[in-house]
Image (cartoon, rainbow, N blue to C red; front, top):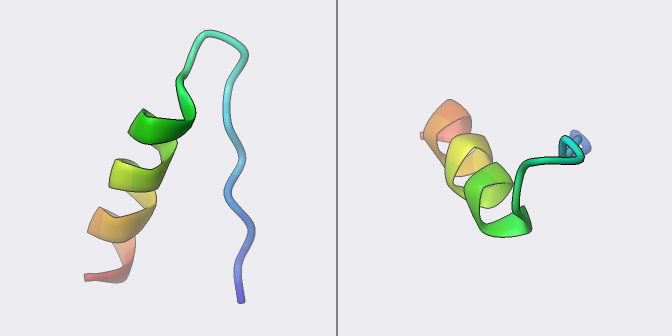
Length: 24
């Protein structure tokens, strides 16, 4: 299971969307 790194100016929602796109 890979970890999601969220930037300071990035919301958790955006990080989740990016993470799902990478896994799809």
